[in-house]
Length: 563
Image (tube, rainbow, N blue to C red):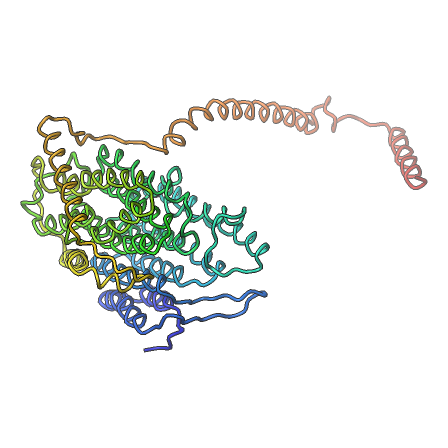
């Protein structure tokens, strides 16, 4: 193996270059070997490793390792391998190269020891990931990708301005605790919030992720938002404002997820909901809460990735992803259905599945630190998660009414990738100590006490009962072909309604002014250009008139020279 100080993103960038110039089996081997070799190397890198150099009077720390960055480094390597395996059948150089660069950028960001290095990888994340959306090569994906790129670059610009202000005031660019103390810290906080999909800033996620390719969405679900969660955990732990933001994030998406027809958009809303739990944990800021936040990020990458993979497999095999057009697929895709249900059980926090051992930490921390109202709302949100992700996704895709679609299981590489994620979801749920040993703090937490198990089991039981009752009464929101708007109503409906009359009047005035001006110019040119007997250039000029003009010019010259 190579020296410990070699930044973990380097193998991914080298792998992307090699993938670009190779093809076939060689390229497939490179795609799989890169995260494996880099991950094995990372296991040998000790906490405290630093690679730094001086640049313009600043010390850049390109690679700084502590327990928090290692945790995200490990899961990003696992996610990169699973994503590459899931996309192995794809014969698209664009997706494969951008996937490696995207994963490498995320890894570079979590090991950045200073804000300038973080900014560089922050922007690389945006640039490399947008190609996974454009790779679908549809008009909708192109437009959604543009909107995604604009928002992501805007986040980077705000981050850069915040870093400049911060460096000027604090004479330091170290990426450590920042807190909300001044303008610079607020700008950096907003930049992180955009990538974390804070409420009102979240629409890029629900807009772009469902428009990516079936495999591209799996990549997207793993990295961007989790880098933002990591950044908040490092810079803003204990910021109480995050508790309120996180609770809103956990609650509002469940209403849109329940009525949404596009099942990948349901998962996009579900992702915001789960990030809400993480943001609440960071906001509480105690050792148990931060452990819960980052361990839930770890688990979310696995079970949310598994759900996105199962829906990607459905889209790949049927060409459809709307709940109203699916159903009955368990007959021809039983393995995919079972794997999907493992992901659904994990995100719903069933005991013995991964979501239970991390989500309960955040909720216990909320209760222990006097945030009973937050605990109650998170409990309500957990019931909503079970409805839209635990039941709705597998039910409408694989069961419900028979859509008549008869297909087959997806390619073996897709099934294997989903199986690995499913095994990890169950393994972490059964033996959480393996994950707990990687967390930043040792809290001695035990998720399997009677209170936690009984509370969660009752919650899931009554949620399931409510779903059955609503379905039998035909009161559950049906899957209808529709487009649901939330905050994007402002720029899809309100802003056009206000701005369209204004711009119509503006462009009409502009056309009138330009027509008037061109008529004047053409008139002058026509008058000059005419060679008819009465045209200016056709007139007979007296020689004396030239003497008059020469006299006028000389007089003008003399006046100017004396002035």
